[in-house]
Image 1 (cartoon, rainbow, N blue to C red):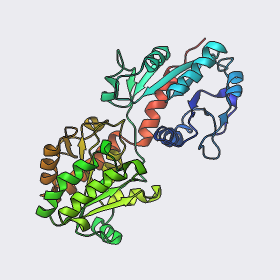
Image 2 (image 1 turned 60 degrees about the vertical axis):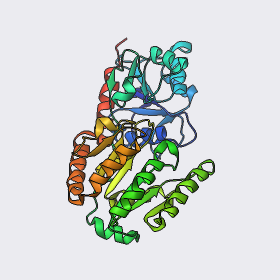
Image 3 (image 1 turned 90 degrees about the vertical axis):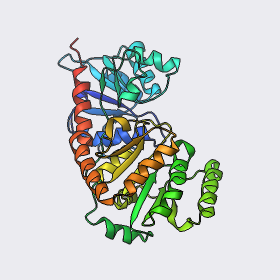
Image 4 (image 1 turned 45 degrees about the vertical axis):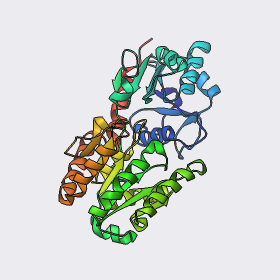
Length: 355
């Protein structure tokens, strides 16, 4: 979108020079948001060509006056330091802005975060679990969305599975860094006896193992080797981002068994790919997954429940196809990236006030 910077309605924080999940969320939503509202970004980190961005000094100058029609601009922050930037603009330089803060944390907030929430004009949560940690509740809950074109069902999943050259007929995937927090150990230990019962399945573990977590992976691989199932557990390591949608499509079940999580896009990526899911109660997954319809939900860190539900799913591959179809439909209706951008833009625009 090309516009006069004086007509800027929305300012997005972009304070982290390192690419993170927060950065990814901002950029994905921005793809749609830029066509819905006049938006600029504070800082140029990781921005694609054509996105207007300003320095802090330029923003001070821009926000000394409200919009020509008298409305205030809105500063949307997703990190603590971005709220601090907005407060400096507002309190030290008299910027005519309103501050909206998206909080995704599912833990007791630090004193500084509690202070920043109080100083913001509006607070946004991404799921009910995160909302429960905000005193008095957020102003609105707007869940994350997923790109339905990037993540879509396979035209021929068995053929795609064979193309990868994986053993067996069906894949049980887990995506993310290999560490205890992600529940990789729960999947491995639940699956060892089940793979003997269901020899047509293979477990695919897709994610980076950092040096400090190598001993964790080594221990799991030793358990797999001792069970005589080395060829049925595939540790793929870190995969190119462009390859992930194809890997999701190839799975028959995707698990997300984190002991704690922020939002957790893995489940949306899997459901958008038409894959049945098994998720823990972490993140937003209790809000998203309908037990027995799209997949199943199990308590966090519960090996027995994980094994029981996984056995149920592995016993009925035809039902998994139905679950995958239901999951895709649910994401299309409620969790598209375009829907997230639209709902977020409408709410942020509503915060503008006339001086």
